[in-house]
Length: 214
Image (cartoon, rainbow, N blue to C red):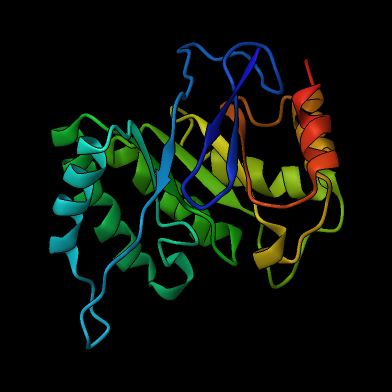
């Protein structure tokens, strides 16, 4: 039921192809193979080096990569303004189309409203999926709170598959992923939920996720 996609940042995407940990979707979506977490290049003056995106996309495609996860942790998401993140996503959309890559745009920020703005933009440019980490300054304390926040962000892109980006070492949010996915699945608060990008070392929690079904 579940396939694992090993991400270049040593994170996992728990990708649920049918009824596992997700509400039904009109259009099936499933990831397979390696998903590359891309870097974001800057010039010496800290302005974006957007011209580095096309060569990166071509190199990844040549290496056999089928999907990319952009503007995440490796992608310097928290080092960029919203406008910069949108510019990166737009350039990656064009590059991914040219190289036949699946494009997953990370939209997580410290504030749900900004994250939703990025989600709206991701759908507008035709992202294949979006991912979102938890807010990390004022943190949710329960799975219910976290799922409510994620649902608000996901609703900004109702036609785009959604992945929760679980990265406790960076966010400080230690709510068990299995609890988050179970609550999201049973409440159906995120109709577009397709799985999670797991970036932690708690293999017990990870194992519990693999056993989850609707």
